[in-house]
Image (cartoon, rainbow, N blue to C red; front, side, top):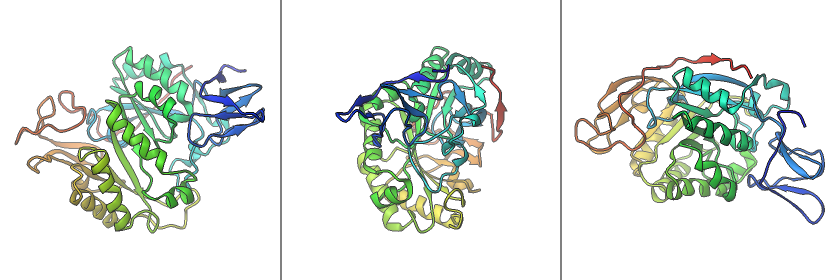
Length: 358
């Protein structure tokens, strides 16, 4: 093994001699030398290994609102990175050059968990995001980074599809402070056809996060014209969120652009995002947002107690701020759900590439 290949858990041997990966519901069954669908987890001899430990496709400081998280450390910078591969097969993937990569040479940056934590601290980042591709597939690396970050008071954020089995899920989210979970649609047909996956395990993860953890999480749905944007589906989705997760879980409806295997599908009209937001609010969601479009109203936060503007946003730039230091509305005293810690950050919309020498 090289330095980037490490033994991992969450697998078992089948009667026919294959090894089954038990990390995600895909349950890949592998002969010696075979890789799972995610590409980065592999069978070597009689064990499973992760082949990308310590390697990244690049580091960048983003505004935390870009994850998107609107109720977690607003206005602050977050050190973001990803690796290669993914355990879903979304035909619309907006980061396909990384998540669908089968070339490990694309992983140019090398960094230990301690180096990432030190870099975040040095650059004034309050948190680190595992993003661009799904951190579930680099599970061990992400957990080690989270532990190193917590030793320095730095939060960990997972941007994920929520496609993980129950046992590893418990350990993973034990180390995570906040998450944005990609709820890609609300029908099994959409998940099977477009994502090559199943919806039910994602819903199980969402219920687990809400009822069995203290992880702050928000939801994002990329609305694809003609695929997952009907009034019926949006009604069913938002009603389910309110009934099973509660009205305070923020929902983000974001615009699709033609990419990867769906280049002939048109861009999402801004009106579709506004319609989705209106449906969510009508069905009881307290905080619904639009994304990937210029929409000050849809990107801003309004108090669910009195309806007044408490956080104004223009793209990723904060404007109005009408919250106390502990997150209460200055007009009516209602507590804004989330993690508000003092005055807002002033990072703005900047995106700053970072090099970490491993």
